[in-house]
Each structure stands twice: as C-alpha cells, then as structure tokens.
Length: 512
Image 1 (cartoon, helix red, strand yellow):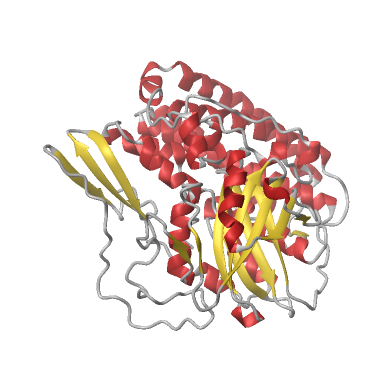
Image 2 (image 1 turned 135 degrees about the vertical axis):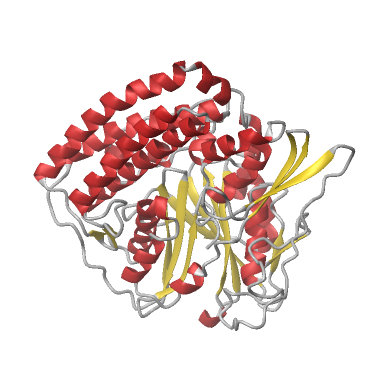
C-alpha cells in the first residue's frame, strides 16, 4: 500500500472488501501515483458539499487495488475548493473532474482540459447545482462547446447527433475524417442530465432505492443492489441469506438479458438478421418469464433496503432450471454461427481495437476491459455474498476488438446461465427482508457491485433522521467513453455503429 497509510475496513455487511481513509490534498497526487504503480485503477471521482454538516467540501476518490476498493476522502477549503489534478496519472479522471467542477465548483489545479462537461445551457457558469445554496438563475443564452478542430488538406467534419436515427439516448459525436477514415472522434454528452443526485437529497431510503434503480434502466438491479448495500453497511445490518441469493439471481438475469440483446444487435450491425432475431427471441422469453415470476420484465423494485421484495417459488425455481437448459441449447449454436460465419468475422475481427496496453493506461473496465486483457471482475477477486460460494469463472480475451468483446459476452452469457441454475437449486430458506435499524447520527458507506457493464459504485450518506443527505451513483461508462473515441481511430466511419454497440455504454448512467 502506498506510503503505509492506515486503512479502515468497512464492516462487510453483505459487501466486498472496501477500505476508507482520510487523505490530505497534499498527498492526493502521491497516493494516486502509488496506486497506479502497484497496478491499481481509479474507478470513481466525485464531490460533496459538507458545509451544512459543519465541514467544507470533500473530494471522494475510489480506487481498485489488490486489497479491494479503496475509498479516499479529501477535505477541501470552503472558500476556494481545489485539489491537484490526477488526470495526468489516471486519464479517466479527466471528465469526472470536469463534471465535479460543473456540479460543485471543485477545481482540479493545472488540469490540461478545463472545458465544461455536463453543463449545457441549463445553468450558468459560476452556478453549481449540487451546492446546498444553489438557486437556479437565468441560464446562458446559448451553448457553445469548444470541440477540438482537426485541420489540413482533405480533412472534413461529420457531426452526428445528439438525436440519432435509431432513437437511442442522445449524444453528439464529432468525426474528423479523410475520405471515410476516422482521424479523430470527440464525444459530447450531458443531454440526459436529470438532476438525480440533487433529487436524492431528503428522500427516505425506500424512495432512494427506487430512484437508484432508475439511474440506468438496463442496470437496474446493479444500481439498486449497490445502493442498498451502501445503506445496509452504513446502518450496520446484513440482509438475510435468502435475500442475498435472490439479489444474485436478479443480477445474473440482468447480465444475461443484456448480453443476449447486445449479441443480437452485433449481428444486426453486420446484416446478420437471423442472429438478431434469434438472440432477441431468447431475450424476450426471459423478459416474459421475469414478468411472470417477479411481476416486472426488467425486475424493477425487486431489491429493497434490507432484502428483496419478491421471492422465487419452488415451481418458479424449477422453471428457471428448465429455461436455463433450453437457453443453453439454443445459444450455443448461435455462438458457433457467429464464430464460423465469414461475413461476421470479417467485420468483427480487427475492428475497433483497444490494445491491452492502452486499456491499462486509460483504465478500461468491465466486460470491455476483460476483452482487452484487463483481468478485473469483483465477483471473482472480491466476491461478496453469495458469490463466495459460486466460483465465478472470468471471461478474458486479449485482442481488444469487436470480436473479443463479442466473445466475452458469449462466455459471460453461458456463465450466467450456469450461475442461475446453481442459485435456483441452492436458495437457502428464510426471510426475505430484515428491518433496518435507526442510526441517530450521520453515517455513510459505499456499495460496490459488478454489473453487466462493469463495476457499479454508489455512495450513500444518511442524515441523523435517516433520510438521504448525499448519494452519488457511478456507472462504469465514465471510464470507458474515452476509450471508444480511441477505438474508432483509423477505422471507417460506417464501422462506428458496430464499434459503438460492441461497447454499449450508457449515456444516462454517466449523466445524472
């Protein structure tokens, strides 16, 4: 551990190993560099206005290390909150620092890129929505974002979005090209800003869990579980064993249906309509089964603080096992088709490459990272209940192209099917929920779950009356969006949708 810092472990109330400590701003750079030199990564950076609690402002950073998740809290001066830039150590910090400046006015000193990130024309420069004394005033008249211009003979720009033909989430992509080759691609997000972090303030924990689940709809179970894990850790309570196993069931179903959908879309993007139809037919079967078993196609609100709201009956458990067997028999030939189809492999192989070295340098995480030889999966290295008993097998590829990301999805699809069968056959008896105690003091904790995209982190601080004071949900798309911009370089513009889909990053999850 860098500089022999004394770390305090959070009591493991249903979560993995999380360590916390206070880190002075003068030691922030050295500590970040120490984490990097030991092979760790920055997972999240966010801020908080603590002045109403008698404090100042606080910069929070969360690092992935061989010990688990290390959570550092750095107090900043109230009148001029600033901290040393760490984007020159962890480049993935750049946009998080810019967003923290937009939302709270915390300044990264000597940062190379000081452009706004989330602020469009909704609030003005000098206003900070996550400060407690924020009052919305007349916003700027226009939004002028300084894209980086690429100039030279034969270079021209192709602006795409923010509204897309496929009615997906909004995002702007600015291509600089020669012919149909991409020289540079720059992304502008922030079109889905909803004020979610502000909305958490003052909610009770049950309402907070529902809101956390709506940060990113396709990762509902991951965000809700991470939120509930943080609340339960802060209140020093552990959900019943059956609830923990059911949460894992929900999380693996979520991983399965997202991977099935993405494998279908990848086929669709290379004109293999058969693959699209078959993967989506199987996905639809699971969605309908979820509605029958748990009352919602996407498992909304099945996880609640203290446990779960939905049980799995014995007959439904038998149906899960049957559907797992049926799905495995149907998916394996489709995976073989993708691997043997000359047209598919011609488009997948060598397209959108992120080398392992680049992935390590820029912090590519989750399934996209594992496709570039970044061997991190919290279910494997830092398993939390019930994953200690499930022996999850990590999918790992090295080539870092669209083909590798498809193979990781395929392998994780089959692994999730194995896990679902094991969970359905091994559910322990017992209650579904445990009442949460009261704290009567301000308390806080982190929740950390390996969602289908990658690590999902939620920071929760509770007021003394039990209501939410500060919540920050962090989606792994924060780290991976910049890698998409590099993966597309040198490729032809028509391959961008395929490369983009192979990452399938969240717009909403990284724009709260």
